[in-house]
Amino acid sequence: MDIDLIAKELEQTGYIVLAKPLADELLEGLLARCEDDGTGRFQSAHVGRGAAKQRIESIRGDVISWIEGEDPVDRAFLEQMENLRRELNARLFLGMFDYESHYAIYSAGYGYAKHSDVLQGKKNRILTTVLYLNKDWQPEYGGELVVYDPSGEQELLRLQPTFGTMIIFLSESFPHEVLPSRATRRSIAGWFRVSGS
Ligand code: OGA
Ligand code: MN
Image 1 (tube, helix red, strand yellow):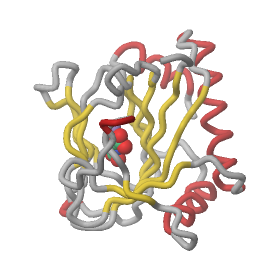
Image 2: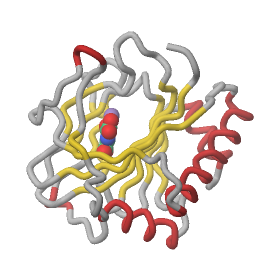
Image 3: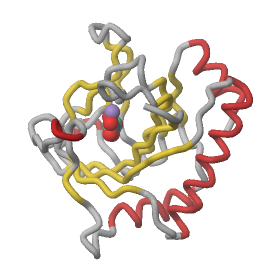
Image 4: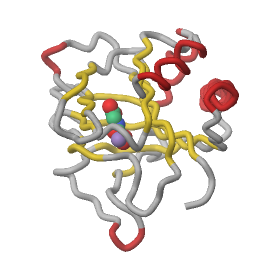
């Protein structure tokens, strides 16, 4: 990964799209992990926290599996992200202290309505990362990530979820949504966090 470029873009525009920051071998392993639901690993995603937590398919239709185990592929991914965390902290003084992430699968017809990744009353998410795992993705499948300016009114970019692409953006600054897709859509979403609320 070109850390200097990432740091510069985050500083200047607040987001960056990387064509293929991770090695092919790792991407293949991550895709296999995202296709493996052998032990019922994937659970419906929820919206909100605590008492407000609810599953509303019309808002958010993915099933997710948090990355936290000892699987060697997961560990290799987390190592890469840990390295990125340290390098970005050294350049941007963001004070990020950990990284949480999950595999996500959107079945055909599902998306994620426009939202912010910073939950109300919780400001600990600093940077969002999304890595896409879809081979041979076709434009007509839809499923784009749409990123808006901080006001939420102006569309900044539309990104197809093609294999190996990663976007990184300031979690608090960019409302975004996942358009419904016509094919199964796989990804890893993650957040670098600071401690505290
Ligand atoms: C999320 C999210 C974007 C994407 O999980 O919070 O916004 O493109 N994902 O999958
Ligand atoms: Mn999001």
